Amino acid sequence: QSVLTQPPSASGAPGQRVTISCSGSSSNIGSNTVNWYQQLPGTAPRLLISINTQRPSGVPDRFSGSKSGTSASLAISGLQSEDEADYYCSSWDDSLDGWLFGGGTKLTVL
Amino acid sequence: EVQLVESGGGLVQPGGSLRLSCAASGLTFSSYDFTWVRQAPGKGLEWLAYISSASGSTTFYAESVRGRFTISRDNTKKSMYLHMNNLRAGDTAFYFCATVVGYYIDVWGKGTTVTVSS
Image (cartoon, rainbow over all chains, first blue to last red; front, side, top):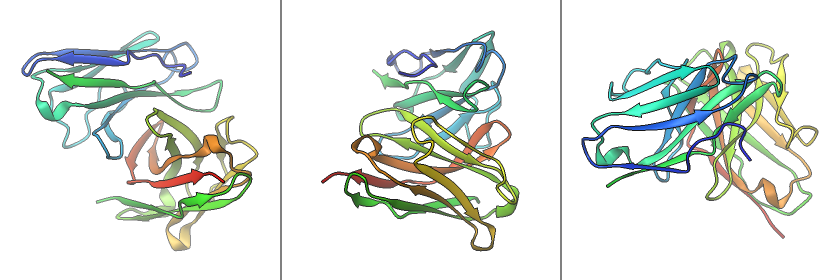
């Protein structure tokens, strides 16, 4: 069972905005940065958001991240069919000395 | 462009051993920290191990693999490894290597499959 909690699924129509939440604790999100990964079907994960809000080059500005306290969110605006994927949050955990991943959220574009 | 290519996966019997390799290109290998992450069939991501840059003097392991798996690196070969011993059915997964920047996992390889079965 993941210590970072994400909803198992999310959905939205093309063009809509959807948010995915990630809840942790003081030893992970509360004291470290949050990163988000996109995993398209049959492919390796790809870094989407680093250090809470930073988009690597090549990631569209439709994707944005935020963090408050022990929770974080990924927002995707202007949904497109190619956004259908699994999304994972991740954060370093000071108690475990390692990274935690959320259980993943499967995004469906209706 | 940074590229990571994993190899060494395959079918192994319970209790057996396997060594995964991760060959890197497009980066100054010795300057990078690396990590291994796995994904069981139909499941989410699970972090496994971390090794620091240069000599690799600092390593961390997930509790699920501590004492059975060992991460190492060879800067002369621009390669990083995961030595896996006493493999169990629960270790069946896709294994990814990745670079680490600060406190986040950055570039990922395409992965290699490990199946533990008799």
